[in-house]
Amino acid sequence: MKSIDRRTALQAGAALAATTLAACATSEPREPKVVATDANVLFKVPQPFVPIVGSPVVFPVRRIYCIGRNYAAHAREMGSDPTREPPFFFQKPSDAVQFVPIGKTVDHAYPSLTKNYHYELELVAVLATGGRDIPRERALDCVFGYAVGLDMTRRDLQNAMKKEEKPWEIGKSFDHAAPIGPIHPVGQVGHFTKGAIVLKVNGVVKQSADLSQMIWSVAEQIANLSQAFELLPGDIIYSGTPENVGPVVRGDVMLGHIDGLPDISVKVV
Ligand code: MN
Image (cartoon, rainbow, N blue to C red; front, side, top):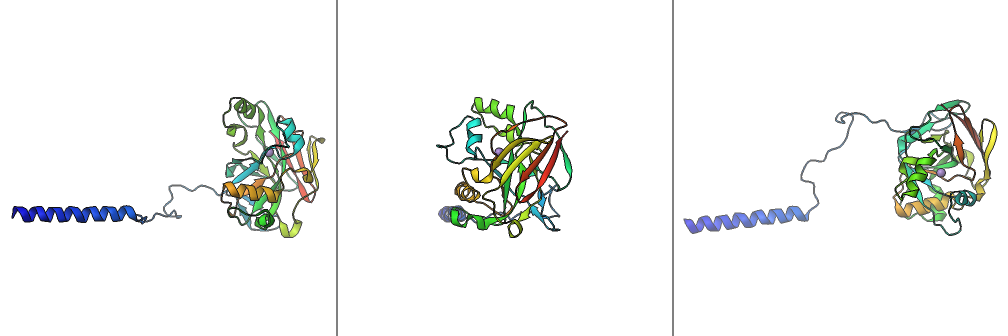
């Protein structure tokens, strides 16, 4: 009786061990899969989006990527050598987008903590497809359209963090840090490899350059980004600002112009 019990116990133990090993060996979830639906989410989080010009359809924003120092003269004014630097990117949160409709001046709140708030006018490429390790030759196939955008920057905070070799996220990734005009589909406006990019503040030209002066083209940016991240529909890319970035204060009106797209107008309040 005693030996049978022992044998039974050993068999049970072996069976349990086998089951455990089997469970470890498989990647099958042990709990039923949970899916977020309208019925079970704790609360709703709004999906950031940008309107598409002339369409009731809107473009949902997944990630905002931004390239740094992509015009040689701007790289120099930021204290780096444009001839030696590979491209680098940072992100802003997707809900940093602030839509700027055409023909209107929108109010843009001066953010907290800064005393040196800078404009950076940029061409924005928005993606409808993505992938990993996208070859440069096929990269523009991912682009759905383009918009005029501002990569607003708390320069004093960015510089202070830089100096301390800390991440400069607080200088770049804050609420409403990414004003953007409506998206213009490639079918209507084509791709942008040249053309004037001009920012005025209160009617005075502050930034004036040409898109052809980008160090890394939009296609190269997509190819490069896709080596570090899987790009997906809804990702948007701020393609860099030319030289002569500078400060705005409350009351200033920024007018962003890129040849081939309507201007955007933003008032700092
Ligand atoms: Mn920028």
